[in-house]
Structures are given as structure tokens and as C-alpha cells.
Length: 166
Picture 1 (cartoon, helix red, strand yellow):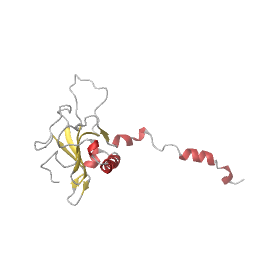
Picture 2 (cartoon, one colour):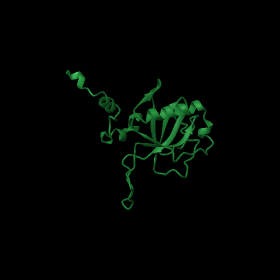
Picture 3 (cartoon, helix red, strand yellow):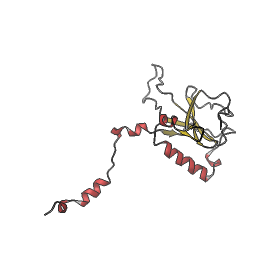
Picture 4 (cartoon, rainbow, N blue to C red):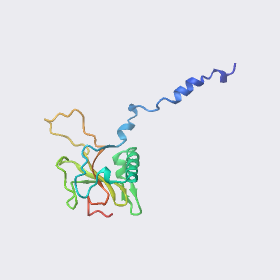
């Protein structure tokens, strides 16, 4: 018998369908996450999901899928357009020149940021600053994740940070 006759095709087919990575690879930690629990659609210059067209929502989901493949730090260094505009920008404090107001349900000590989606369209929210530590008297069950973007506003018309070049 030749070596070809001893190949177990069912075994090979089974092995081909097994996942090739595990949590131990650390890959999942590097991927940014999006959290909508602080979403605010009550402000006049922001929008709710129902205000966006079907195509706009599909574009948003495609962008979120794309962005979640890499870390926030990666996107902070990526540029788009002729002027080299940043895909992801961390502002820090809430902008002084904004058509929005800081929602009461958003912590005061976060770093405000935005994703550039296209043209004037922005996804505005915040991140927990890297290395943020609570007071020693506070015992958190988990450390903060500085690779999560907390979505607060849909900003179709670039009204969040009015001093930024469109």
C-alpha cells in the first residue's frame, strides 16, 4: 500500500474546521470595542439611529466592523484624505466650542474622542484614559479597558467640535 491510501480524509476535513486561534494569543485584547451604553440622542445637533438612512446605518456598521479589527491606538495613527486627517482623534476634555453639552450621565473624568466616518460625519464618544486608577479605597472587580470606545453621539454634521477643520 502507498502512503496516499492511509490518508484519513474525514479526519483532515474535521481538523480544517477547528478554530486556529485561542484567547492565549492575546489577539482579542488588541481589538477595540464599541460600547453604546452612554448613547445620547436627546441633543438637537445629534441624531438617533432612526434619523439615519438605511444606507448610512450600513456604512456605520461596516466602519465599526473595520475599526474593531485593530486597537484604538492603531486608529489614532491612521490618516485619511489628502490633508492627512486622523481617523481617530482623542480630544481629552469636552470641547469648549461645541454645539453639544456634556451629558450628565457621562463621567466627568473621561477623555472625549471621535472617529471620522466620512466627510462631516463623526462618531463621538469617550475612552477611559490609559493608566487611569481609582482611589485606593475603591475596589473594582475588573480593571478599566482603555481599548473601548464609548459611543455618545452620532454627529452627521460635524457639530461636536466646531473648531476642527471639516
